[in-house]
Image (cartoon, rainbow, N blue to C red; front, side, top):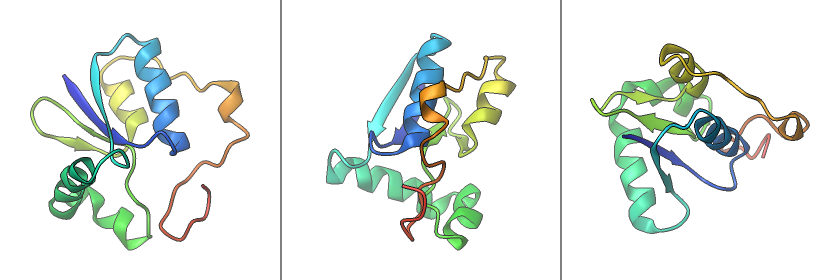
Length: 108
């Protein structure tokens, strides 16, 4: 089962959840703002995985982050869906919402 680190306050995370649900993907959603344990688990991955290096350099939090069964981390959920032969669905209601969440608070 895939694990998704995100937040219900993150627009990208909510669109990813809608896509996973629409494609009937079984996943475990870990809301990093729900507890310090969840935040710590995410930060442990973010601190060691090179996939986050560029995101940290541009002050991006790195959400949503997907971790597959093999432990591979994905920060590009659209690529994960495509590579796993799932359809990408962008709900119209989200098109007018901010499209990025960064530490500099731009976009959220």
